[in-house]
Structures are given as C-alpha cells and as structure tokens.
Image (cartoon, rainbow, N blue to C red; front, side, top):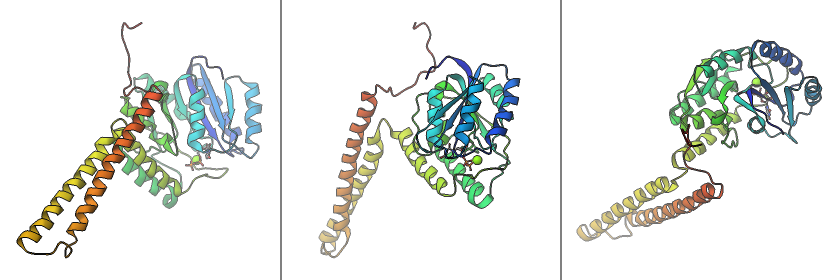
Amino acid sequence: MEKKPLELSIIIPVFNEAENLPQLFENLQKVMQKINKSYEVIFVDDGSQDRGGQILKERCREDARLRVIVLRRNYGQTAALSAGFAAAAGRVIIPLDADLQNDPEDIPMLLKKIEEGYDLVSGWRKERKDPFWSRRLPSQIANWIISRISGVRLHDYGCTLKAYRREYIEQINLYGEMHRFLPIYASWSGARIIEVVVRHHERRAGKSKYGLSRTFKVLMDLITVKFLGRYATKPLYLFGAIGSFLLFLSVASAAGVLYQKIFLGVSMIQTPLLLLTVFFILLGVLLIMLGLIAELTVRTYHESQGKPIYSIRETLNFD
Ligand code: UDP
Ligand code: MG
C-alpha cells in the first residue's frame, strides 16, 4: 500500500451496509467538493456478506481517491478502523460510520477546529437518534464513568465521527472496543482536545451490529486502559502498594492475636485473627511477586520493541 502525503484521510468501516452505500457516496461527494484539500476516502470492508464489497470496488474504479481495504473476515469496528488508520496518508484523519448515522456535512466544521490548532476534535451526538433503553442510557452511563475515571471530560466517546491529527493515533495499537479511548490516549500524549456537537440520524437501512453487551466490554476495556495509562511502566507501584497494605494488615492482626493470648489468655485458635494473619501475609507477598513479574513483562514490552516511555511534541535544531 503506497502512501503519499495528503491533507485528509476519511476512514469508513463497513459491515453489511449495502443499502446505505449509494447515499453515502452521494453525501460524501457533495461535501468533498466543498473542501479544498487533497484527500482520500478509505473504506474498510470488514468481511461484509452482502453486495457492499462489490459496490465499493465498482466506485473505487471510477475515482482513485476512493480506496478499499477488504478484511478476510469480520473483525469488528475497532479492528476495521485500525486497518484504515494504518493505511491512512492524511495529516488529519476523520473516521465516520457507513450507516448514514454520522453526517459527512460535519467534516468541514471538524477541519476548522483542527485549523484553529486543536489536535483532536471529538464529535458529540447530543441529539442521538438511537433507542433509549438499549443504547442511549447505557451509553450515557458508560460515558459518565469513562469521563470520571480517565479525567478526559467528554460526553460521547462512542461517536465515531471525530478528527485526529495523525501523530496522535499513529503509534497506538487498539484492542477490543478501544477505538473510543483514542481521546484518552491522545490526551495522555498532550493533545489539545475540543468537543463539538455533531448531527446524528436514525438508521434507515440495515441493522445495528451492536447491543447492550458492548457497554460491558467497553467498561472492561476501560479498566485495562486506566491500568496501562497509570502503571504501564511501573506496575509494581500498584501491586506493591496493595501487597504492602496487606502485609501491614497481617502485622496488625498478628499483634491482635498476641495481645489476646498474652494479656487476655485467649487461645490462638479461638479467634480468626491467626488465620487472617497468615492469609494477609500470603496475599501480600504474592501480590508483590506478581508486581515483579509484571515489571519484567513491561521491560520486555518496551525494550524489545524499542518503545520509549515518553512522546515528543517537537524538536528544534536537531536535524
Ligand atoms: N461495523 C464494522 N464491523 C462490525 C460492526 C460494525 O465495520 O463488526 C461498522 C458498521 O458498518 C458501521 C459502523 O461500524 O459503519 C458502526 O456500526 P453500527 O451502526 O452497527 O453501530 P451503532 O451505530 O449501532 O453503534
Ligand atoms: Mg450506526
């Protein structure tokens, strides 16, 4: 896959959206005419089993700025987006759903914010047109939790339509449902982030591929991301802290047993404290050991891949 520098890459994950594609092409064309920039649109066909793949290929034959990546099977939206990001040549990258729920008409507004100097412009589907109980409510709760826990205050992590300066997503590997955490990763590497309200439409054709179970996955991913962000280079700080706390508890409960034995004459097997002492010691030591193993893993991770523990915004007079 050849990459020549472009101003803009639009990335569209597609899974069984044949009914939506013709309208999508039309909407895109209308907007792209207005934008005076070099661009490419990368469609990632995520193992579609309908006519979608065929339609994409036909369109791309007519216009070299439209590109298609066909995945061998259905890997999920995050993986499809990753494939698009990896192939993207644009200085700015804008992902967008294929089902016409996001509106390409918002693209110029996102670009304007990037031009104003922001590194990441996060779309917010303020008037989201999805079912309330199965989608909007769980998503609102998840967004609230993510926002609190990550400290990156946004209303809508799940909205695909966002604009990124490429350097902020370039080196990030995505797993699970993690594309929605890109703003968090970006913020950790110092990105200037702004949130803007974007349009949202009801899904008119095709089916949503997701339901309630995704919210659970997203929250599990959040634990990973939070852990990696905070302790990726020093896991012993976390394991060690909990382990040390347990060791402290074991000392306290040992003192309790001895006190009861010596001063109150209570037999050691009459209280659960002796058992607790042993339990706390074991768990404390184990956790610290686990932390040391995690330290080894981290070193393997960073050193075998030459991954530095920092990222540089810019340099002067180095070349
Ligand atoms: N999608 C994908 N692979 C999948 C599921 C979905 O590429 O396994 C695409 C889908 O075609 C759409 C976007 O991801 O363009 C969002 O999917 P969907 O509309 O089903 O999610 P929702 O909007 O309901 O959250
Ligand atoms: Mg959708």
